[in-house]
Each structure stands twice: as C-alpha cells, then as structure tokens.
Length: 599
Ligand SMILES: [Mn+2]
Image 1 (tube, rainbow, N blue to C red):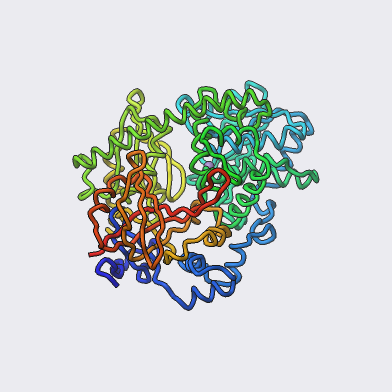
Image 2: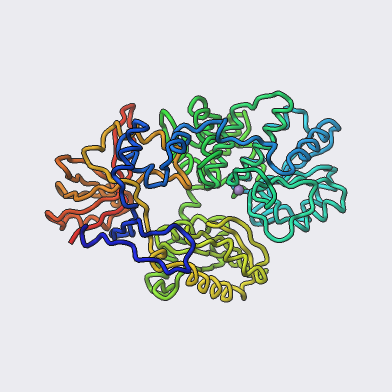
C-alpha cells in the first residue's frame, strides 16, 4: 500500500445511510477522492471462470456486488420472463384500461396531460401513438414551463371541461395534483393519474392512480420512468386487443427512460436493451435528425450516446414556445416538419449550453471568492433572477458532481416573490426526505431521493438552507462531501485490448445505477511530453507493465504543466475504456478521468 492509499475511517455509528465503507480503499486523486472495493482475488477469478469473462470484467461485477451465480447470469442476459413483471400487477390499471376502452367505444374526448421534459414528452407521444390507431378521440396538452408551471392544474381542468373532454389521463405527473383532481370531480371529468414520482401528502381523488411508488401498489419494480408507466398501461390495452406495438413505441420508451435518469436495472435495463436493438435496426426520422445535429455517425448507438448527445436536444423541446411542436417532432412522419423543428432544437440546445456555462462559471467564481464558502458550508445553494428555471437542474447536477455537495439552485421570480428551484444530491443524502421535513415552508415540491424540484417564498430561503445544513451534519460524514469517483476494477495496461471492449459489452446499457466501468491503472509513467488538443483536452502516452498506450483526458488542461514536470515519478490513472469508431475502423480508446501522483 502506498501512502496515498488508506483504509476508510469508520463512520460514526448513527450514520446508517450508504454502504459500510470498511471494505473500501480510498486513493486521493488530483480532482476526486477515488473509492475502490478491496479485491477478493479468489471470488473475482471464480466469477471470471464461471461466466467465461475476462478478469477486469469479472472484477467490475464483483465490485458492484454481483456475486451470486444466478444473479450474474440474469444481469448479463436480461430476459423478458425474469425481468418484466406483468402490467396487471400495477394497482389501478384494470380500472384505467376499462375506462379508456369505454371512452374509445363511446367516442368520448380524451385529454392526455403531460410534462415539458423528455419523459413527459415521450410519455405523451407514446400514448398518442398507441391510442390513435384504436380510434380514440384524443388530444394532448403539455404545460408551458414558464406560463403554466409543472403538473395538472385546476385551470387546465376547467379548460378541458369547456372543450368537452370527458377523460383526462396524466402522464409523468399528477401524483400531487389534489386540487386539480377535486376540480375534475366537480366538473364531472374522470381522471386517470399515471406517474412515477414519489407520492407525498394526501393522494389526489382520481378515478384511479397508476404509480408503482404508491404504498400499496404490489408491482415489484418501482423504478420505471413516467414513460415506463405509460408504456405498461398501453401494453395491457394492446395485449387485450391482441395487437403489437409499432417499433417507434420502444424508441420512445428508451429515450424517455434514459433521459429521466432512472436506474438502468431490472425492467428498465431490459427495455432499454430491447429499445436500443430496435433503434439500431431502424431509427425514426426524429432520431436521425437528432443524431445528425450532434454529428453522431455510428454503426450502433448506445445508452450513453442517447444520454449525452440525443436526450439533451429533446430536453430543448420543453423550451419551445409551442409545446405541441415537441410531440409533433417525436411522432411525425413528415420529414420537412421533423427537419424544421430539428433545426430549431439544435439552436435552442446550443444557446442552452451557453447559458449553462455562464451560470456554472458564476457559481464557480462565488466559490473561489468564498461568497459560497465550502469550508464552512456543506451544500451549494444559490439563486438569481436571470437563471432560467429550465437550465438550473442541469447546472446543479454538474456542480454536485464536481464539488461532491448537494446543490440547490433557484430562479428568483421577483413579481411573485417566490424562488423556483432544482436540486441534485449525492447518494449519501436523501434530498427528498430532507425536503419533506420542511413541507410547511414549501409551496410545492416533488421528485426523488437524488433530484427534486421545489418552490418557496424568497424570504424562506434562509430557513430552508439552515434546515438542510443541519440535516446534512446529522447524516453525512465529511468524506461523503468530497467529490468522489468509484472505480470498479484494476486494469493491467496489457489487458487494454480490443477484446476487453467486447467483454465489457454485456454490462451495457450504462446509465444510472449501472455506470460505465471505471478502471484503475496502477504505477504508470509518462512516456513523452503531453499535449493539448483544442486548448482543453490533454493527450499523452503512458507506460506500465511493458505496455504503452495513448490516453486522453477531456477538459483537464490543468494537467499539462503537472504532467510535463513529473519526470520519472509514477502515478495511478482512473480511466474509462471505450470504443473509438472512425471511418469504419474500430479502436480501443482510454479516456482518463483523474490521476493520483505518488510521493
Ligand atoms: Mn419523469
């Protein structure tokens, strides 16, 4: 063990969140604290042998707690029979199916009420695409983020009544729409709520609620996205009618599931795999335009391409003035329409990236000049009138990752004197629970343990901050509040071959709760001078165990002077192993994440 590697200090006994960390080794890297599970050589070799996979891949499975032979098999080969529970297990779904079929039969007007994010847009699109061919008199409404805000409102219900709708179905929202549900009841409109957000407070009084996260819903898999819940409802209708879905349905399910960053485990893992296989056979017009916009040309797309290149553009859909365009873009078969909207999306997304960078830099500046003092404060909390509500969630995510702190950013609406916020939290701190304790000052809030949205009076911001600062001291150790990365396996540089790429593939699709594996390359030395690409990406060659490999560190220009003065000193590298496709040839590429220089 080098001086850099030390056993994790024992957490204080009242800390029950997170996994016990005594079986972890920590390495202090330049930017991140590296966490890697202590190896058990015998177990790793057994996994490799049992499943005929290479040692580093077996090591990844071992580090992630896939130890049981049967569990590993079902992880590597997910199957419909094992991973996909029948839709009828969802509480309320039978009532919903009957009511929808009745509405179609009687030609009653149905309104889908969606959301402006990718999950909401794909959910709405999926339901339309499924119900229109059945002859439903169906229309949809997506609220405008600025004018209407999130979720089904009494205003929207009144308007629906005026327009003669008899049935409203929410997708990806509605679980906290108590007042709107009341209004619907009074106006004689039946309301079906489909949602996946955690219920809190009294459940709305609707005809039925389909949400696997309801306390008494027996459906075993709780991590579906909004589009996943919509899909289950539609799949039961199609099963009853003995029909099969068009491929486009699976594309929408895949896009929404990846974009909503739900865990890619269990049923989600099954559907994303299935959807990717459909996408890689034939992509839709919308998908093609989005791939072109991001200059992606690959023989096969993976979940990371969708998460990082495709989904952010669909997110820009929510910023279109006319939200209807978003759904039109997703499901239209008119190429000129799709191309026209696709062009706008590209522009909006580029503009969004600029705003995103400006906000990030402003906050970074505040941290550097200590107006946000991370030595004394444990969370990042900041607010501004100029920050658009639609962008702050993404920036909060980036800050959380780079600083290791739960982050809350607010758009200040000075007319109404309210603050509308987005927060992202570290795995060790359940932000949903922490916010629930302060319900009395929150005008609205909702979300998950790692991400939530909220609204409160501006004057209450200090109280919220004080509460969160206090809770974080109760639950989280100082070590939890450092920017961290989790490494999965040791990689001997000679093992970094094309075969390794093939061996890693069964672990895909990567995303939330199943990240791309990160490897630890020990005791490397620099072979020759490192260089900068485009002034920001560092490229160099490293040498270890008789092997030389090129490696690229994206957005780490500060490593240049460091590495070029390192001489013969050896260092550890944290890196991804990826496939680089260029003009038909496939090469292995090491993408460095961080280095740890040894004394
Ligand atoms: Mn959602």
